[in-house]
Length: 136
Length: 476
Image 1 (cartoon, rainbow over the protein chains, first blue to last red):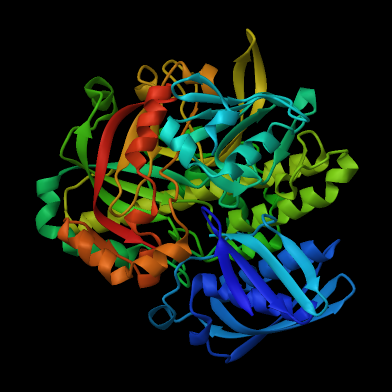
Image 2 (cartoon, each protein chain N blue to C red; image 1 turned 45 degrees about the horizontal axis):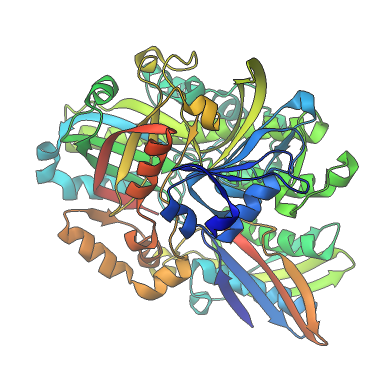
C-alpha cells in the first residue's frame, strides 16, 4: 500500500508491504502519485534500475532518486515496479509509459528525494514501511 | 511555534538562546503572528544549523521561513573556512540558484490589455513549461562545459541577449570558480535538452502590473512607476542543479564521519570548506549557478521574441536578476573585522545595502533590488537592500510567501479549472499544461506575501519599494 503524507512545503511518500521489497515498490508508486494518478499510467515500456548505498535507508533514497532521474531523462512516468535486493545493492524494473501531458496532467516534477522523515522499519513482523519527504 | 521559549529582542526579532551543542544563537526575523504560524520544525532546524562547525554570529530564519530539509527554507547561515567552517548541499537546496528575474517592458497596462490573451498564448507556446517539455537547444559536451563556465555571459555570446543584460545579474551573470569537471554525467544528461525551460511546481513566467509604489525615490532609481508592465521569471538550474544537490547530499552524508562531523540531522550533510568534498561541491554548485543564469537568460530571449511579435516596438530590458538558493563567498564585518565568509541562503535573497561595491553603478546609491515572487493571484514585491541588514542578517531578506498548506490538501480543496476561472474574473490569465498543478499552486495555498514583506521591511532586512500584480501567468 502507498500513501502520501504531509510536509509543509513539499510532500512525503510512504510505501508499506509484507517485505522490504514490497515497501520499496509501493513507495515508488507514491512517488508517481506526487506527479499524477498512478492509475492513468500504462505499462508499455520497462526500464532497469540498479543502485548501491552504504546503508538500507540511503538505498531507499537512492532508489527514489534513480526513478527521478529515469523520469526526467526519458520523459516517462512509471506505475509498476519490481525490486530485488542483493545485500546493499538494489536491482529493479520500472514499468511505465512516456508522459502524455493531456492525459496525465502532471502536477509537479520531483526534484529529488530527501533524508527528511526518512524511515525504513519493520513495524511488526511482516509489516515493512519505507518513507521520506521528496522535494517538489 | 511556541513563542514562550524564544527571547523577544525587538518587535520583529526573536532569539533561540544557545544551549547544548549550539555554537551561536538562532535568530528569527518575523512578526509575532508569523512566528506563531511557523511549524515547530523551523525552531528545530534553526537550532540544528546553529550546531554546525564554523558558523558565525547566528543561524537565521527570514519572515517566510518554513520547514525545509536540514536547513529551514528561509534560512541563512555563514561559515568561516579558517574556523573549520563547512559547506552544506542541504543549506543551498536542490534547485541551486533558483531565483527571480524581472524585465522592464517600457509598456503600460493599457498597452497590453487589448492583446493580453494573444500574449498569454504566444508566451505559453514559446517558453517550454511543465513536465515532459524540452527546449530547442541541445548541448553537446563542449557546449555544456562552456555553459557551465560562462553562465548568462555564454548565452549572450550565443546571441540570446545583450551585454547590457549582464550588468543587471548577480556576479554579472557569470559565477567565477565553476568546475564543470565536478558535474556528473547524470547531471549533464538531465540538462542536455532542458536549457531555456521553466520547469513546474512554483516556477512561473508572469506579465505583471506595478500597482503600488511605497518608496518613490527608490522606485525612480529602479525605473518603475505605477501602471508599468514588468515581466518576472521564476526558475532555477533545472535538472542539473537537482542532480548535483542529490549526489552531493549523499557524498556529504557518507563522508561526514571521516571529517569528524557529527550531524544532528542527516539532511544537514556538510563537508569542511577546505576539504576535497567541500571544494568539489563548491565547483559543481557554482557551475549550477551558471546554468540557472543561462537558463533565465534564454527564457528572457524567448520572451523578447514573443513581445516583438505581439507588441512590436516594445523593448525589454533587464531590471535585475536575483538568486535565492545559493552559497556565496562574501566579505562581512564581524566585531569590527572584515572576514571572508561562505554565506548560505536557502530560500533567502541577498539584499546588499547602498554603497556595496558588488552592486551595479545604477543601484549603488539605492541598494540592491530584492525581488520577492508571488504567483497567479498573489502579488509580487520589489524591495531594496538596507545598510542595517549587513549587521542583522549578512544582508539577506525573504524570498516569497511560503506555503500555508500542503499540495495534497490544496488539490483536495480546489480544482484547477475553478482556480483559473476565478482568476480570469479578476483579470488574470493563466496558461498551464496541468490542471492539477494549478490547483496545487492555488493562491489560497500560500501565506499572505504582504505580511511577510511587511515583516521584512519593519525588521530592517530590506525596504518596500513596489507591489506588482499578475496580468498573465504561465505556470508549469
